[in-house]
Image 1: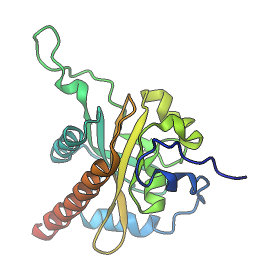
Image 2 (image 1 turned 90 degrees about the vertical axis):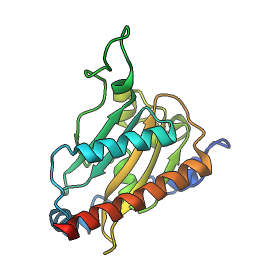
Image 3 (image 1 turned 120 degrees about the vertical axis):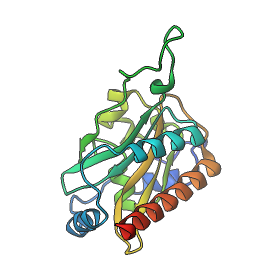
Image 4 (image 1 turned 45 degrees about the vertical axis):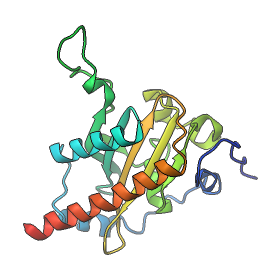
Length: 203
């Protein structure tokens, strides 16, 4: 069946998503990735430094949620770094919200439970300025669960060529991220991989 062409307003590389609608379930890097994550000291636990990285990512791109997402095994994706703009929203002059609508840190690897699995499989950054323009993604469970309308993500590819996971930003409104957003998230992904590998070398 022919893929639906991207909306004319869609951002750079968004058309690639339409050509990769059906992804095979197998992940040839699953075992190697798990071993590499262990070697880098990355586990299924929140990381305050990665939370701070996610916050910077959201601020630099203008998204309301941002995450650093590692694919720990063949079944789970884990957001070791996570940020919600609600965390910075004061209430009646009081402290920032702590009970915010940020999603949980653990999600299944199923391609219908998030857009990051597509980025890992493609090994390329993805811009969806308005998810509603892409039927394959518009029906994804997290779109309605979190109420998002736009997505920006890039793979975390280490020096050995293993895709460790992704960094991503989402927003509840369409966002004209365009080429600038794409280059920003790709550069930040490269910076984070360098930081992770340098930290492992110092251990």
